[in-house]
Image (cartoon, rainbow, N blue to C red; front, top):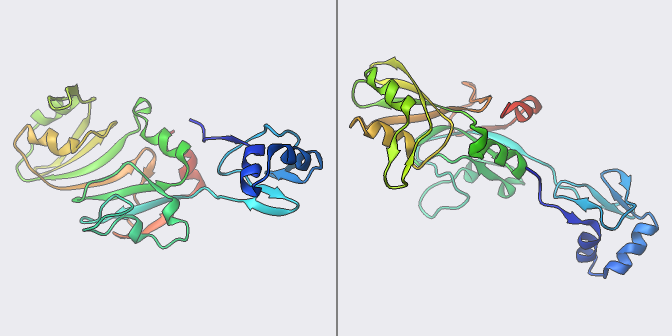
Length: 236
């Protein structure tokens, strides 16, 4: 996965509203610096996180941001909503409107939500071919049996989409609670899988995405930046 890139001459021409011939002169005069190095080519590629200076003045300096948030029930995984509070409403950061959600949860599901403005990182976590594991605690209305384990592991056919789900790991914790691990995220997948047994999901809580776990110390509705180790090891 790579960030979208553009040429430095195109960026500066648009920024200063000048033509590219004029940009070529700026580069030749060593007046353009990219990520601390003097630009030497007008076709040098940059991206949204490249730090660009002209005549010693920073003209682009976007930082990458990575957050984890403990989503409460009743909050929407969206940037805007007419009826409900959104994930973005819970964040008090000047850059919050730059963020996008890495794997949404529905209105009545709680737990770990990741947000970032780094599309490379989010795509690596959500691309189905990487099979990043998502861990859920599920509370059911009716008692569980060992029959569920094999059915989840075999995958289930969803006629509406004409697909069979990837194998999912189900561990029974007690009569009414299970731990489920998915490597995909079909529409209401967990609720629909338990629906095959006519067993309604009472509560659904995401505990982990890849190697990032929701800590018990992070209260519902709160968020914090990811550590550098969490960012690097998220999909390892």
